[in-house]
Image (cartoon, rainbow, N blue to C red; front, top):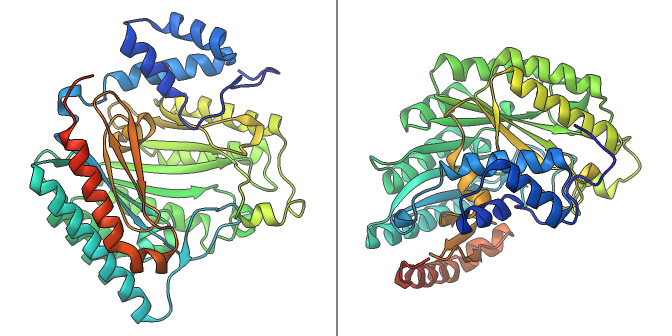
Length: 400
């Protein structure tokens, strides 16, 4: 429940769940003791401590066994294009180039990046456990380019033990029947549609060019085609929205009945138009935003879902958090591995991060260039850097 105490006490980091995993590494303890320690050591409010403990214990059952740390990795492929830039967005993203030549330069570089990463894994007999194509909006690519991307990824990383293949199809105005068929053909088994809201007035405010009905229509097509898992993302605290607007959005979401959904508390970040135009857009206050987040948790429970991952960001309204909910056994493994940093992730594409997770859970990060032209020009350097990091990671002894 809500309260006057600062929700997350003295914590400021993105991944508070790692504290719970360290507790469980040290000894087997139950939820009440985890909650007590979180409250005592970090001044976390009781409801947030319980939420964090429950998610951490749930993760414990899903994380890879330590002995498989160097046998399986996740693969992230970043596509930096969007149809338009949303009001709140601070991610490195670009409107799809108008000139085909510019796009082909990017696609050629991405193909080299994918091939190099595939060769690297093959050389050591390491297999992809999960694949995540994010961005940006990957489905901003034309149907032919999108299909070719999926073909390359399947060719280099698909294997009999691959458990999850996610595509972010965040904007329904970027989807068409050919892209849906391509995802089905190339064995994508999790699709994320990210409406952020089901209020038409808000979609217009934040720069979305599609309608609420477009969201409903694309969701219906995904369901009819039999995609195993459909995720949807929402944002609490969008400009001009009230708790009643959020309730209406959640009611519409419940009727669609997705398999996962994530609720993000609005973060007003540097580089976003919302930050640049501060004061021009009326925003819900912290208490109102927390009421929206709480209502989302109630709807999730009503839909038979449980919270399954959590992370935080700078500049979040009300010092809150982002929480993903899931139906039983349909959680996104990639999200869990990424948040807990308990599996190596091979990053491909502009702004992608490669994370090498050592046997003692130390993490070494390597970053691709965010700027598109810099990524293309300096790709050989990043490929060499990733290969060197991979060889070093593989050479570390398997001792906790």
